[in-house]
Length: 314
Length: 77
Image (cartoon, rainbow over all chains, first blue to last red; front, side):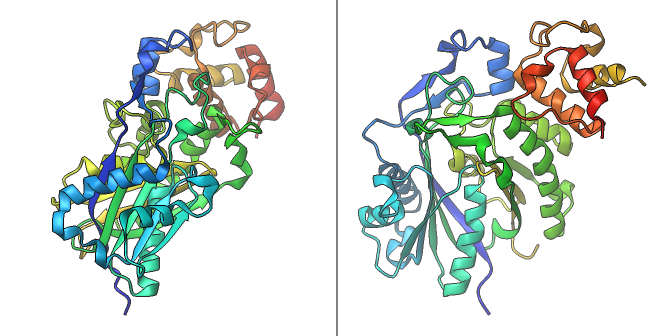
């Protein structure tokens, strides 16, 4: 029987050193300090260096993981590398995960591919990685996220420039007892794909109202469906890790789900880093403590993906 | 309850610290102190509770309580 107890073992992260302070531009966009703090919730947005590629960012996240795990990382025994990005190196050909594979000197037995998803990408990719390992008899995988939106956004766009930041993460997935990858609920509303897209000049544009409405209507339903699929009640979840689209979206979802809203966004000092947002938040939790964590990512597509990470035996 | 009262109630319930009864019928929402995020919540509340969805891109056409109420009356679900 295919192994199904795949779990998150460890997470490496990378946030660029350069950033833009949002307080320096609220006047330009006619925001108040109150709106910055309580509705946007992001105080500064990280920005990669102009010549820094997506694969470079992945390598830096890997170096952080290697520092954490030392010999336990065992790159020679990796079976799979997956990268979630919509800002690939080199116009996307070859796939950036292959470039990362080469930069890291990974073995040829380790297959690599990219997934083109945004904010739902990390959670959705957990399903893809688990399924791929089960189908191929693999045991160990690295799941990278690196989607530097600074490449596409306009710093003059008030809807996007004050929210999105650059970062990269890498998650080691292998059989384990804690944070096992559970059952999923995912979906897409392709009729709303234009709500978050690059325009004809390649600049990112976001229809805030459309994205907000999509999240407010679909995420609570997804949370309910995911809990049911995992045989859980909301009160059995130790931590809800919801994609931090903005403080306003997180507060709205928290109210609709009747769960406590965070006082500040965990990403307040680097921004919404797309598919890296959730692993960045997970990396702040002590994964050695046995607890049940609910994760939900939602956005570009528009789409959503939710699942539960829980101790084995649940 | 009249449509106007229902919309005022939705505003009070969705915009934290804001009294929907304080808005003048013909005053632009933005001038009354509501921002674009507040309006996103109000329009979603109108859609969910009254069944009237303002089409994407048409938000500026219903920028006062008077206009929004008229739209809801014409499009109630």
